[in-house]
Image 1 (cartoon, helix red, strand yellow):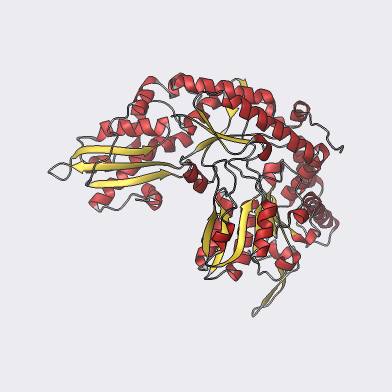
Image 2 (cartoon, helix red, strand yellow):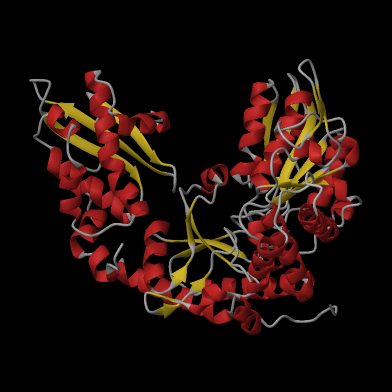
Length: 146
Length: 412
């Protein structure tokens, strides 16, 4: 990683999402949900999804849990990015789309923090749809404690 | 070595090439020695010298070079025997690290001696390396795992010991001598006495103790003691298990294959003598030689002097860190801890703290320190941990404290 400096990595938008997370909370009787853990630091995130009447559109999505500014801000951004999109689309979401939103270079370790929410959301959607988890998510599912 | 001699950390730093560089334009304040220590030139040169002058596979060749290599390995074993004050060199088994040493005991002793109705007692302070093997092997054999709890000071609460023993046979008591996450120095002498009263063996994880204080397996009274070389100025990949002869002799092997045998026939293989029975395959020869040189290095400074230096740093760090607004410090007072300080800043995740500190040239650990049961007890996912060694200077602690104010500013 190039040296991002303080101002860059902890830029205003990240701190804003961290301090005022969007979509923070729990959906009771959610249509899809999963819990993910980052084994490196023990951080946990739970994601809850409610589908619209078509059973496809993500009407509401929320998250709870604890984590560092990067993981919490990235998950908060993810909530804004995915609400209103279809389950299929989000299950196949390219991580670069989220990384572009985060907008700062991340070291491999911090990349794991940033991806915790997205990975957990994908696991939730695949579980709800009964579709097999892609190879990259298979190991993640074993960590799933939900 | 003179008793009571103070070490000169500033002078010793010249032995460590790693400190010759800067990070993010600042001198490196390396406060993560509990994870792994930095390496003195003397140790690196000993390994190089071995590779350049004495390298061949040990214990097999009849030519002079192989004899020289064997001598170097056995000399390293003798250095480790003296370092832990073991009665016999054949009780010192070279392994990769303390994790392997503890797995060796769990597999080669636990798998054969544990069963339903048996109890394995570990502490809430354990590193995963002295927790998971017992959970796994004990579970496989139908034995129960019981936890020795911590009190509010981060010290082991021994008041419930006899309660723990109710409803089963305590067969193993396994704790560390020094906690890698809180720095707590545990009352192992009392635990050893209690374990032996129950007819149990005591397995001591000394990975965090060996670098910092004089280790004497005979006065400790434990039955197995595990040490990692990489935390005590040695190379990664070499550690040691010490065990009592009378326990090691009847044990089945852990890993099987080359070198550990007496004879191999299609219908039956017999095991070699100690320590070879537990050293299957080609040994980490150069690493063991490096570990021997690390022991020379530490003993020339004096373990007493290292321990005193770390106590001084721990007391200084606790005093300085206390000033930082919003800080929570974990663990016992300075006199009952090694050079390790764990803390959290209110509302700021350790990853963020460590990342911002890195930009100030300060390297600390952020995470669960392989102690998730402890983190659970503390009610946190992770902590920050600053740890010190013989080369740590008080200014590095100042650099840490200044860095924490910078962290607070970012999150203000």
